[in-house]
Image 1 (tube, rainbow, N blue to C red):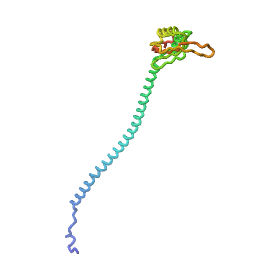
Image 2 (cartoon, rainbow, N blue to C red; image 1 turned 60 degrees about the horizontal axis):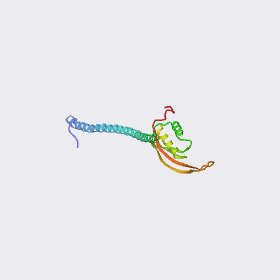
Image 3 (cartoon, rainbow, N blue to C red; image 1 turned 90 degrees about the vertical axis):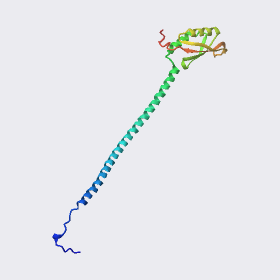
Image 4 (cartoon, one colour; image 1 turned 120 degrees about the vertical axis):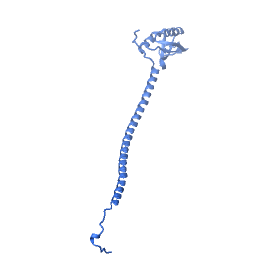
Length: 191
């Protein structure tokens, strides 16, 4: 169609303010959620980075705690072993003084075959003597000694002792038991 109206009669185009306002409003409505989305995604990334750092620190702490648990178990094991050794060894004893005392207790007519210390400082002596009287004297000396306690005869039997280069001899085979006294003889023989 042809417009036959003069140009002054032409309708001037108006700026459509309504359309501009609606456009700005739509743009603003789109911009606000977009800015919140960007802000939240940045906060999520920061939180994930912190969580990753915390996870690494927790892994380090777990390794250290496992090492600590191993050390605690090893400590308990060593403590138990030390306690068991103390039970076996018992109190401090000067063995040279105990053996000197034992040498004085045994007469020339008696022989010790074995002197054995067992747990809790209990001892057993196995040996031979020529007669019962010597055995009684030896028991009495052991009972009155400051190094021995709870001395008793476990067994005594008559046997023939046969040694190369010696005559066969009738002897009394004995086994004596008792306990070593605690903290006696630890002063190098000085009483």
